[in-house]
Amino acid sequence: MKKKFYRYTNGAEAYGMTVHRFQKLAIEAKAVYKVDKTILVNTEIIDDYLQIKGLTPEELNDTIPAPGHRTLNATDPIARLEELEALKEELTNLIKEERRLLCKQGTEA
Image (cartoon, rainbow, N blue to C red; front, side):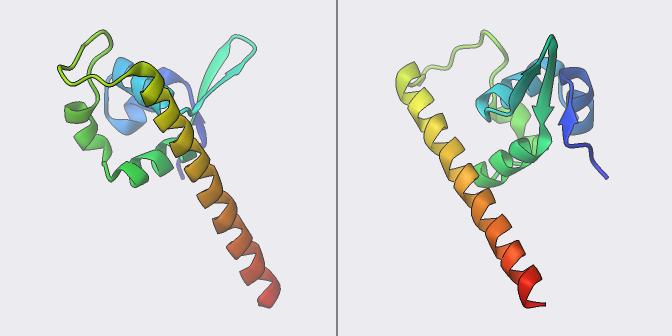
């Protein structure tokens, strides 16, 4: 059973990537939580993000540039932030709907 929260180093190991790539993925998926001085990454959000993007962890090495790397077709940062906010809202709505359906199934049984 996979843990729900990881620190960057443990999460990188669990997902088979470098710490920098895992950190970039976690930030992009908005799955980072700060508890006092500890950074935790919610793997459920990471998994949902990867599923929506249609990616496997193995494919990430080709799609997420290393920190500091610039791509030639970089988008406007504000537009990218808006896109990520919309994706986060979509994920939240999908999770709420799934929980609602699970609760409904539980009451019908």
